[in-house]
Amino acid sequence: MSPRTRTRDVSVLVLWVLFTLMVGILPLKNFVGHAHWEYITWVPIPTVEDLRSPKYLLDISSDIVGNTLLFVPLGYFLRRVLTSSSPLRCLLIAAGIGGMLSLSIELYQVYCHNRFPSIFDVITNLAGTVLGVYFPLFSRKHASPAPQHLNRTPNPEDRRHTP
Image (tube, rainbow, N blue to C red; front, side, top):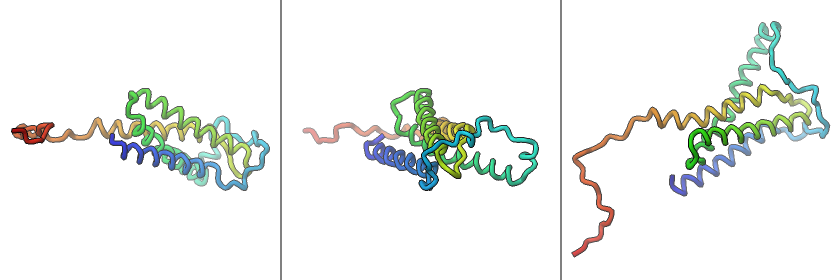
């Protein structure tokens, strides 16, 4: 990876982390400084009534898709930045960073009105990060190899004309 590409990837990664933080904490006027532990959804098990409600199903579906898609770019750019790491190590580092970012956002939401922190959000955010890490791995494995032209002569490394 060229230094220019690496710098661009790190810049996009930092911007995406900032964007993700803003999505998770805005509007700032909701912050009240005292905890609302009673609002945390510790075990996100829907009731039968919930599953019959089209509004609930729409809300939970959009929550799953939104949270997952929000963290896919995080995993993707972490994988691009962590090129010297093995795939397993990259996955663990990305999962750690994605998990900590998600937990930080949810902890902030404990101290906010009109925000409802949930363990389910952390799970879907972590899933999005892992999917983002696997995306470049998947695309590399299944990419078609470049055609090999056997009749070409290789370029010499030294192109100076010597007498």
